[in-house]
Amino acid sequence: MDRIDAMRLFLRVADAGSFSRAAADLSIGQPTVSRRIQDLEHQIGAELFHRTTRALSLTEAGQKFYGRAQDILAEFDDAEAEARGLDQEPVGMLRVSAPHSLSQIVITPTIAPFLEKHPHIRMDLMTDDTYTDLVTEGVDVAFRLGELTDSALMAKRLLVAYRGIWASPNYIEQFGAPVCPESLKDHNGLVFRQSLQGQQWTLKHVETGEEHRIMMDGRFRGSSGDTLLQGAVDGLGIFIGPDWLVCPHVKSGALVRIMPEWRGADLPLSVVWTGGKLRGKARLFVEHVQDALGALESVGS
Image (tube, rainbow, N blue to C red; front, top):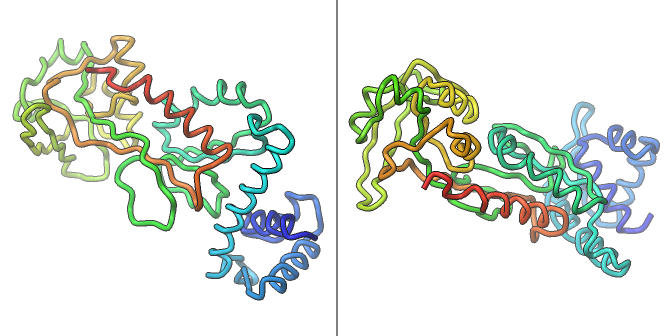
């Protein structure tokens, strides 16, 4: 078994977290997979996996080898594709992770045109509002909202969206529209359900930079941005959110921007991946999503 095939097998086992699961995926025997990994470890001179009866995990050497093997295989695949004249036709499975609301509004609508443009690519999209383990799940690239914590992952910021303040025409007709941060206290705020005391909104004046912090609460709470968005469309209260999230409802007239001279805290959107340069299928898809985001920017301005 050559080194390239051995590295591919190693990555498959690491992503699967199991010799038997990797063997089933590849339709070969589990003893064969185990033996080939042992041969690779012997060639390298280091153990790549911690093996117990219940679990399989990467050693420190295995974690370092995982990132380097990904880079080497990506370079090899790029060189092979170029030699075959397929450098404009990427192939294979692309695994993507994204928060549910971002996926529903931005990511999913871009998939059909992307796959139509690249017919040799297959896609596996995981939507989860918690952080997916990229190594365990075999994710090529993940979209993440908010400030990133310190991490060994590579990252690229795509944009920083500001959050506008939105309400439905029906809500405004019933309760009126607030005109300043202090007047928000007299309204139903659509807030996340993590805190029993409501949610603090930090508002900044667009021109002066003046800040106000307002504790908001209301009759309806939710655990995701798209849930609160639907509450706003249905007239349950005032919502604070980024342009890309509200875009379809602003275009339809279901939501309007209120207090336009004020905006909420900035919301960064980044992509993360396990190591090396963002390349191949992942790079193409990120660029494709960036184009879609560009069309949604400043919808409420």
